[in-house]
Length: 122
Image 1 (cartoon, rainbow, N blue to C red):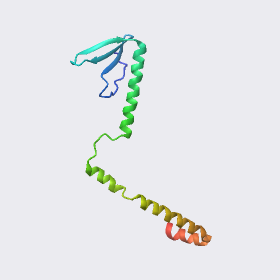
Image 2: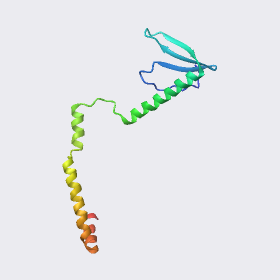
Image 3: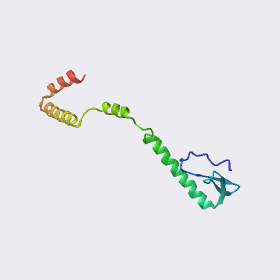
Image 4: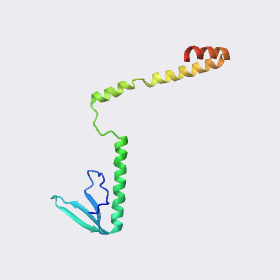
C-alpha cells in the first residue's frame, strides 16, 4: 500500500478500501465469507472512488456537527420542553406589549424619555 494514501474515517456501510502501489491502483474488500480480495482498477475509477470517499467524509463530518446521534429518552425530552416553556400566546402578548410601550414612549417629550431611560435602563 502506498504510504502517502491518507487513512480516512469511513462510513460503516463502506465495504472497500482503495490504495495505490507503484502507480497501480487497487481496491480491497471482504466478501460474504470474510475473505479479503484485492482487485486492480483503472486510474479513472480510482479517482472517482477517491472523490466518493471524500464526499462521504464530508457528509459524516456534517452529521457529527449538526445531528444528534443518541436516542432521547422521555426524561430528556421533558427537560428540553421545560427549558423553553414559553407558549406562543405568551410570546405574542409580550411582543404586543413591547410594541405598545414603544408607541407610548414616542408620544412623550424628550425630557420625559430621558427620565424613563435613566430610571429603568441605567
